[in-house]
Image: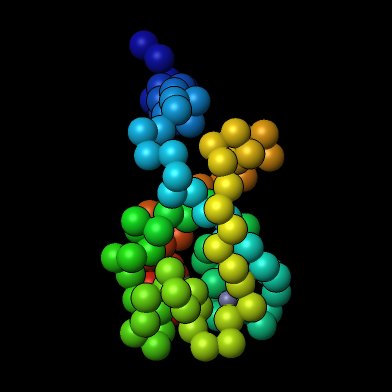
Length: 105
Ligand SMILES: [Zn+2]
């Protein structure tokens, strides 16, 4: 019997290699990654996020992160990137736990 870790690894590989159905909703949470970051930004910076997901969230000020990201004065930007760009540069996707972390801060 295959080790459960191996099965999960293979499954993740399969998921990552599949061309997604929605191809125009990948954004790099772009900007500095330092101690000045708000928790919201710290959880997502350098990762791929979707507006579909961000639209369901609120930042600390209660505003929509698609427009405001971490809030007033946020130094970050959402930069739209292609699936090919993500694969080529091996950019990680924000996980559910990253989004949850962002929401807590
Ligand atoms: Zn920010």
